[in-house]
Image (cartoon, one colour):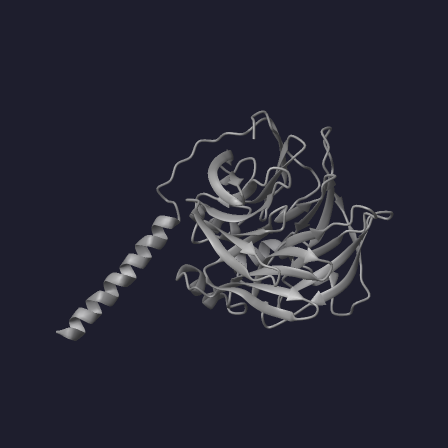
Length: 371
């Protein structure tokens, strides 16, 4: 009898989890398309503007050509047949329209190879006096360990000099990064498993709390500052440096932490989004967050499997803050996938909304509404 009760309990628990996952994929959802103003595609980036960071004078550094071991064989075939390569672009945002420029990368490090460069998360530690900004970039080289690359931007020649590669067993399946200094940063591990695709997918959809945030400082090396999370994607810092915002993709929430002098993080708020957040940025003036999300998850999964066949809905949320905490959410943008598929990040600058995508394109929208 007890065995039967235990077996039934296990089956019911498994069914409950399966139903929860199916519900979160959004088969039942319906949205209505709307833009904050006229929107257009930014020419020059063909396969993804997965993440970007922007300086106070509008210089936007964009990662493109992302790939990971977790992606399907059909995605890999598409990637290689179209000769897609990893790259970093520079877009100078202006009101008259801009064209991104692919930045040449100069490296003397034998460990860094351009032909295996697969960038995702990016964060800029700016030097506004010289223009020689430091860039930290997440790299997923095929069949190698995940790493973080450090570059210095040469403003006179518009090139990137590769400075250093960071590797550690603390860097699992790295997704995003937040610069804290010239040799210090936070990085998110969206998954613990980083080699076998089956176990990656199993970990993701079983919602295992194995995701984490790690901190690096030259003097102390890598160490965990947050553990026990699920599918941690984006991370960004408030303008004052006091608050850290962490996005949990499959949990559909954003967590707000206060940052102490030793870089430890203390939870202050858990805010549900009812959408799957990918990445975003903080407005340095208002403190508001702009986040690219995947509102209909099953569409995004299909889109990642076959980018040339399936489209995915795109959504941008504005999270209003007060004293560092989130107080309200506004949907600034929704598209059914025709203009842009799989929105991954967003920011508002100079009365323009900039929206990136995982493996699609980059768009700019005029802001004809108050934000």
